Image (tube, rainbow, N blue to C red):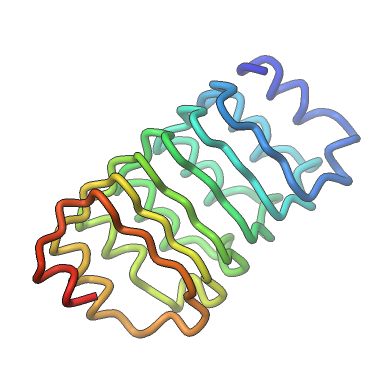
Length: 171
């Protein structure tokens, strides 16, 4: 749908009744996502899939500051050029307290970003964290190992993150 389509969608009353919004591979980019995140029509979203939309760190910044998107339970951000700066914003936002699933596959998360995510107080309901194909390495694994336990965590994906045996054992 692209950027213009996302902006049009953000203004539709139809969006008020939507709980699941799947926008995979549409390349809505930052401008399109900003319109959705700042739309009062997005208030009931619980499941947001933005795979391959290139929203980048600025897109996640807008989401963490959104006055409307506060009840997300599932957030899929596979291939969105997300890095550590975004994750610092998430860790300082109250918008993610309901989040159960966070998928960050194929982004640019390093040990610093893993440190921001390794905090069950920020994500008290978290059940699934997917960091497949990032750059967390052993230091990122150690950050999770040192954190308090995630009481509801059922799935934790860290494949293709340059973990050694030491990182894997720590987890």
